[in-house]
Image (tube, rainbow, N blue to C red):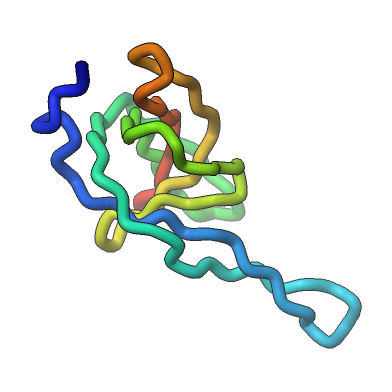
Length: 106
């Protein structure tokens, strides 16, 4: 049984859209595909330095109802935070999806 109070955040599922860049490559952007109710639980941050730019990757466990077609190219937006999907698995006998995700903070 799913406790409906657990899924208390509205996230926007962003689908990848690739367009021709005119030089033989593509430019990837994202378009809103659906609004989903979810639970977002912050996990430990991971720090890294790349090209003299210090950023922290904030990790989160996101839970939402099953039945959503996902790929690792999709993103989940929560206001200004955009989560990159790392992995996902079924929970509660296939009723829920539990997603490992991360977002960068500057």
